[in-house]
Amino acid sequence: MIKRLPVLLALSALLPLAAQAIAQETDDSGAAPPKPTVTQTAPHRTATQGETATDAAVSPDQQSSPNQPQIIVNPPAAPQPEWAWHDRVAWGAGVVLAVLAYVGILLALRTLKNIDSHLVAVNSTSQAAMDSANAALALAQAIANSERPWIVVTVEPFLTMENSFKVMASNRGRSPARIISSLDQVKVASDETKLPKTPEFEAIAPGDEPEPIVLLPGEATGIWALNREDLPSICQTPEVLKEVERWQQTLFLYGRIQYLELASVSDSKMHETFWCCRYIHGEKNSALVMAGPPEYNKHS
Image 1 (tube, rainbow, N blue to C red):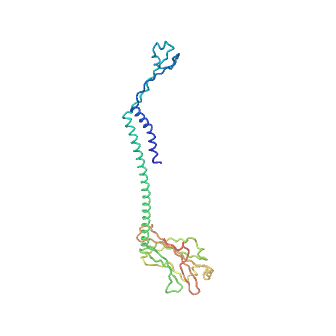
Image 2 (cartoon, helix red, strand yellow; image 1 turned 45 degrees about the vertical axis):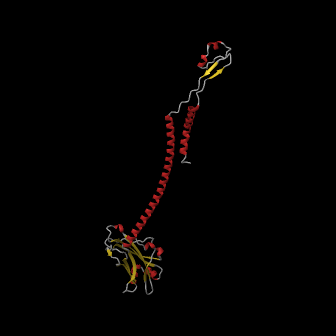
Image 3 (spheres, rainbow, N blue to C red; image 1 turned 135 degrees about the horizontal axis):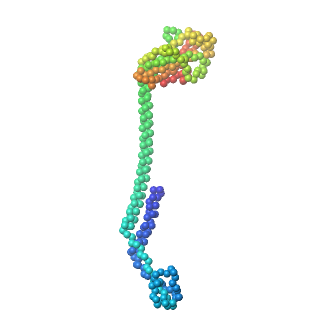
């Protein structure tokens, strides 16, 4: 109904012109010119102020004789003007324009519908392209991560000394790594929940920073060494040492390693490795194992 409304309005506007044209054709084709009518009036009628000029055309005898009837001649009605050819052309042009307007409206609606369908297709295509780009980016990132260096921290026992352990940092990636910073800290707490939420380290005095170390893929280096005989100096007081030996307190060793890809020229590709170990005291043999909450064992 919305599509046909402009056409109905145009046709309703042209209907009066069509009716007038039909009436004019009827008058031109078969209607004869009207004849003048003669009306007899009753005697003793006097002329009024609104009478026409034909009343003055009555003969003097009729005016002088009051008993004779007066005859009034009415002029014929004016003929309807003929429908000229340019009016016919204008009417036909209006009909043609109405039809063309209807067709144009239909075409416009169809074009809008096609544009809408094309927009939906373009949106789906762009979404698919975006998904493909994200997948390609994730694949490229995965390839880059597989080729980058990865510093992993492990605990190994000394083969030549009993109850002695070393913390090793090894490069498990596919490219060389340059270690630029290595921090470590000792903390005595009842359990892991008593540790700070994030690792805390003491500031290093200027000049005590370790020298940068380059690790090729598969190489490793020691970053910490612990011996059972070192517990008194680590615990600092005999009371703390007894609590550790009785498992009332736990000795935690944790640290952070910062390294770069050897091929990078800036610090934008800085990576970090956090590690944490727990010392377990035994009556004869002791152990040092990896432990700690997730914030103390993460990689970037």
